[in-house]
Amino acid sequence: MKVVVVGGGQAGLATGFYLRRAGLVPGRDFVVLDAADRAGGAWRQMWPTLRTFSPTQYSSLPGWMMPPWTADQGYPLAEHVVDYLTRYEERYELQVRRPFRVDSVTRADGGLVVHAGQTTWHADHVVSATGTWTRPFVPAYPGMFRGQQLHTSQYRQASDFTGQRVLIVGGGNSAAQILAEVSTVADTSWATLRPPRFLPDAVDGRVLFELASARQRARSSGEGAAGVSGLGDIVMVESVRRARDRGVLRARDMFTQLDARGVRFRDGSLLEVDTIIWCTGFRPSLGHLAALGLRGEDGLIATDGATQALKEPRLRLIGYGDWTGAASATLVGAGRTARDLVRSLTD
Image 1 (spheres, one colour):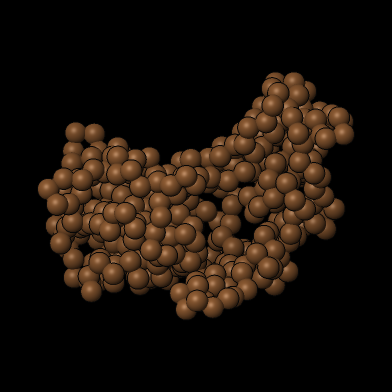
Image 2: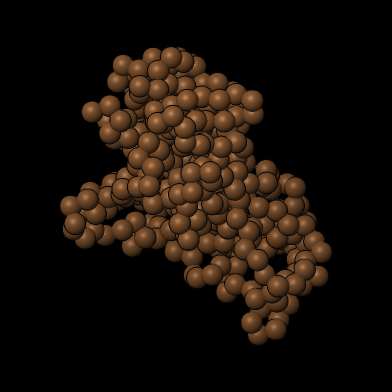
């Protein structure tokens, strides 16, 4: 059996681990391709002060627990995760091939063909694990703003905005963490589509994963289950708690249009700002699968409720969100989803 894994981030590495444990030989029976020139996946592109939502024992891939974070009393920073992922692929000799950016996947000779520039691989199965980081989403609003605009994926450090008037857009974890940082050096405002919902201080990634897993099990058995959204959306990491204590976590309704000087709200009022930071999420990076003609009107590829594409059973998807496995876009969730994925390939 020949398997090609597209993407060498956390989901691709977890898949490689289970393929290897199932007896497949890296480089011979399966290959992991990665577009980046170094290990670490999307974590290498994230802003340096971003933290995981869980302690290391709950933020690990299968087989080897992430080494403890001892630098402070908080959860690990992104650089710690990058180091862990780098050492993980070396530890299990996954032989990730990089940089190979996959252009397309096509059908041929009873299998699938993966194209990356002038190089091709023929496979019995393809596992797509390209994630979402390369497809930042910014909603369209009428009007034009003359100041600086950037997306979460372009944010690096709060000091870049010292003394500015900054508008943070979005009601998720990235928005809250960036707001918490930027508000220490700038005059910040926060706009959200709906009032932000903060999780209780004691709830972190451990609880969220357990709830997501319970919801997935309930779906499989046809039963109902309480969802993660019932608790809230924003994890109260230390920086966000401090921002709450400073009284800066106050959001206002979303604006209706852009203005040269800032944004205008429904009542016609103008908020003048120097910078807008769009913390408005990402979309799945699925362009390499376009030739297979699998995407629906929602832009996603229909699956069997897990990782297998309904219209192309030789294709598996992992790491894009709950539609490809409960919490599969998280470190620990990617591992559990990869286990089931490989089992479905090798049983």
